[in-house]
Length: 168
Image (cartoon, rainbow, N blue to C red; front, side, top):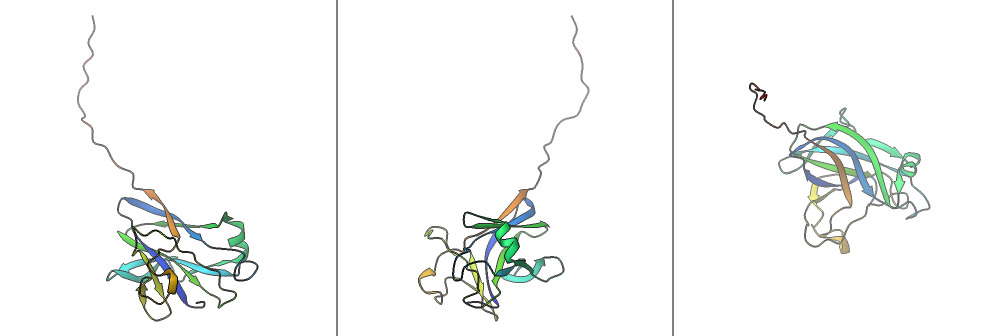
């Protein structure tokens, strides 16, 4: 696709306090011989679809250049720092293929047939689930995009009282 083509996954973040990073499966050797760069962002959930960018907090997606992509590339995955404190219960981790083919760094999809329906795309006008039929042989597959989160620290209750020591 290319410029202004966003893809992302929805995540329930109940029980988590922070998003530490976005992790994206991509390739550095196709369609050209190296990375060119793309944008990443977290979006809020508005009317059960991506609404507004919530990270970066200025509302503008973060461009990840080819040097940062290559530095964070590990066996097909790129992990990129986010460090966002959550107040939402559902968010979308997203990337934009900023450049047109053949400079558009690719996104990858899995072949999981059991847990489908969490991936979204926006071709510049509206968000739709990726299973809408216009992606050919990858329809009904999920985008290989993850987020790393920190669990909310739980508070355990305890009884406070007087301790009596027993002596012989």
